[in-house]
Length: 186
Image (cartoon, rainbow, N blue to C red; front, side, top):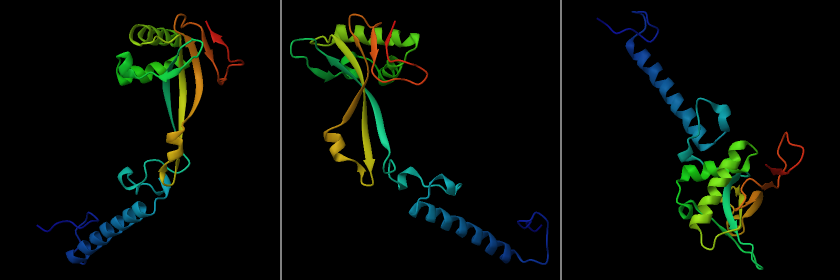
C-alpha cells in the first residue's frame, strides 16, 4: 500500500518526490523565519516565531527592575539604618517576600505581617531596631544590561515604616490608588 500524500487523498498524478520537496521547503521556511526572529528580535508581534530568553537580553533597555527590601533603624541620638535579610530573621525566601509585599498594603492582613516581622526583628537582631521600613529599590537597565552606577548608588524609596513596639501604627509614605490620604493604618 502506498502512503497518503500531505493532502490526505491518494493521488497518482503527483509523485512522492514532489511531496517530499514541498515538505522540505515548508520546514526550511519555518527554520528561516525562526532564525530571523532570533537574530532580529521584534517582540511578541512575530508569534509563533518567538525570541527565546537564552538568545536575547534578560531585560529590554529602559525597563526598571524593582525589589522590596526590609531595613531596620535605631532611634539613638545618631540613628543608623541597615538592611535586614531573610537569613537574619530566620525565614524562607517565600515568607520574606510575601511578608514584605503584604506589609506594604493597607489591608487587615498587613498588620499581621508587620507584627510578625517586628517580633522576629525584636528577637533576632542585634542591636534591636526601633523602626522597620520597607523600601523599594529600583535598578534601571540599559542596552548593555544593568546600569553599573545604579548598582553602586541604588535608588530606594520608602514605602512604609512602623515602630517595632507598635506594628499596628504604620506610616505609608506613598499615596495609593483609591485612598485619599496617606495615613496611619489602625
